[in-house]
Amino acid sequence: MGCTVFVTVNLIGYWIKGDLFLNAVMASFPQQVLGSIIVGIACILPSYIYRIERLTFLQQSACHFFISIGTFIVVAFSLKWIPTFSIKLTILLLLFNVLIFALVWLLFYFYSKSEVKKMKKKIIVHTDSSNNQ
Image (cartoon, rainbow, N blue to C red; front, side, top):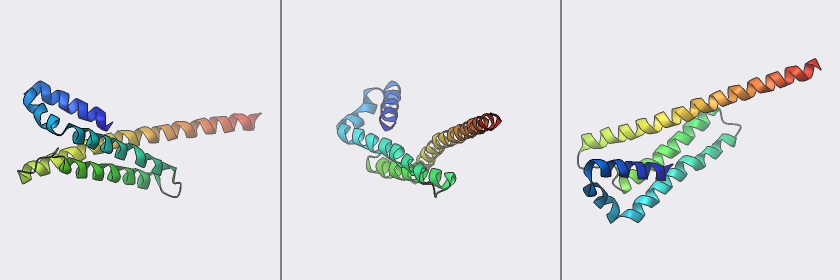
């Protein structure tokens, strides 16, 4: 996921600003790619928290979200994905990125909840059909 976002952002930046946009990325390309990989891993690995049954689904989801966004923020500031020359701009971009993360997280959250409902429905139907035999 991190690499996909990296490529997409740079492609759009290139279309808008041309080579000027890519000059900054190319100057530190290995670090930029590594940062994207780290963010991608930070979004994927915490999904194992959903196997901890003593936590509620909301606790699992919140933990996953905060690990992902926390890693993103550290990497984003380290690699200057979020400029710091203006406090207002920094806060605005940080809030925008948190909003994007929250939207993606919510999509996965609601998708997971709908999958759980489907599984429960199948279990009920299967249990009912077994009891009728």
